[in-house]
Image 1 (cartoon, rainbow, N blue to C red):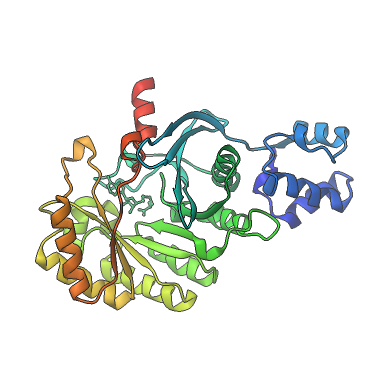
Image 2 (image 1 turned 90 degrees about the vertical axis):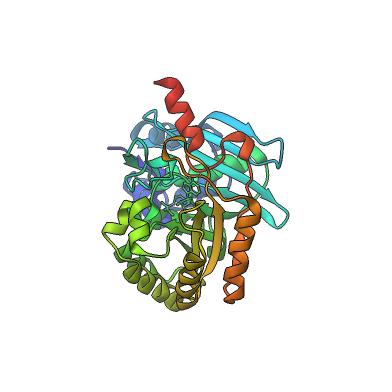
Length: 345
Ligand code: SAH
């Protein structure tokens, strides 16, 4: 297999170029083109000799995503990108402009094998992991396309990032590298359904990134009804792991909780959820569930979601209700990729 240049650290790139008989500074130039200027081809790399560019395009891989579809919300400016990968797989990413900075939500896998009942991304199962370059390039293409600096990245698109652990780590290092886009670790959030060993491993990396845990139910019984992963790890094990993550990294964790009417929004649910959040020192992000046709789940009305949030606040838990943005462009949870697959099948 050809070496994917954009997935390499600066040191690795130096080694590759030295091996090709090139000078070390060429690696710095190439790295700069890829990760700072966000070049979409070798041709743009004006200060590299043509012979080197030709050699590179022959014997190595240069990942650059193709925009297959782009939808912009008339309501809030959110943009949803459907990108084509080299092998024809489609992935989606979302750009969210905010006053305090622009945020991009990226996918970590093509498909997903976690099978959460309310989520459209898992419907076709896992197809494959994304490489570090494929994760990075979602951000690069979007920054290029919008002409605006991306300051926040959330790994909350399709896929379970901790199920693609090695490439995720490589991606995080390249994304936050001072010689690249240099996005602050504090502005990066990784969302997981709770793979306990990986949460512990990530804590050991001592990165200052925020961990978001998709909890969605306050008891194992209920969680098993909507998330198959709950058969593998108990809430007890997960809470211990995220609490430790918070302590080791000094970063407050977030619990994501999709509100499903009549399923996880009772007084008792609020009380149990509060206790778990307090124990882990977590902030809670309530997400009124986005309806996925087969599942038959619906979100509580706004007033009820607010009442649920109030109950948490009463217990002195920090809580926000996620704004629904991009609702007019299938921006939520794997919906665009899914529509595309349905149309082309
Ligand atoms: N696999 C990771 C990240 C991907 S999903 C994880 O589980 O966290 C990002 C978030 O969106 C998760 O909290 C996920 O549970 C949630 N989500 C997926 N489908 C949803 C839907 N239909 N409505 C509301 N939230 C949803």
